[in-house]
Length: 287
Image 1 (tube, rainbow, N blue to C red):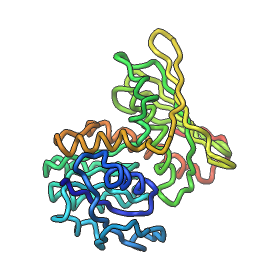
Image 2 (cartoon, rainbow, N blue to C red):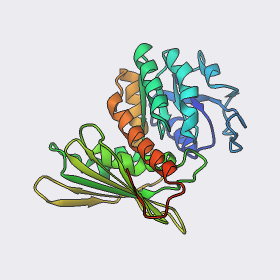
Image 3 (cartoon, rainbow, N blue to C red):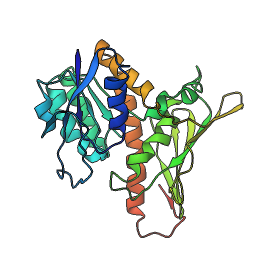
Image 4 (tube, rainbow, N blue to C red):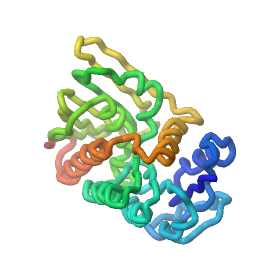
């Protein structure tokens, strides 16, 4: 049996993961056998009893499990929890976002490389068929993604939900992220950057009174336009979990490490711009 540990129980993603592994047994012989739960350790009050054995700290999973999923809602906690696991050589999936700072993301990647411990992280949306169908041999001329974001989220601000539209867009592009231009209005944040040869626009809308749907549009080299609205059903996490368990068995991360950094860098630039403009008038153009 492949033994899997979880770190953190706040997220509803935990319920999907337990169902995937332990109830529906979609991960082959993989079973979630233990949870590291630290109520109050990060100011959190949302840790839950999910019916599994509990250890008090992430490093206490070492020796009990063969791989770990870090599921804290706040990406600011991810590096502290993932680093000792990577140093022990364990494969690790960090639930979105990988981190809320480039420094934390780079530290995890360095540890993965140093200790030969496969690491991955992603928005589940990058694996959905509606998004995968838009990946082409040639990079698109332009990509626009939309999704809900609460810039005041206690779980890492724009990083917590912003990773979804950002990763949807970046999954379709190649190359490094250029300078990110940010405009904020009363209800939305619009971030634009050149990514390789693709113009990327991400619109993040405050979820009030209700969240806007995720949406993606792509302009190909031949100027044809394709759009998609990913469907988040009861199994939307499963394709990403399939990718994680394939990594555990093969040792090969499904997302190259330079790609892991792109969404963190993009959102860090957005977050920095918002911090700088905290006292600016709505609608100010930032760079």
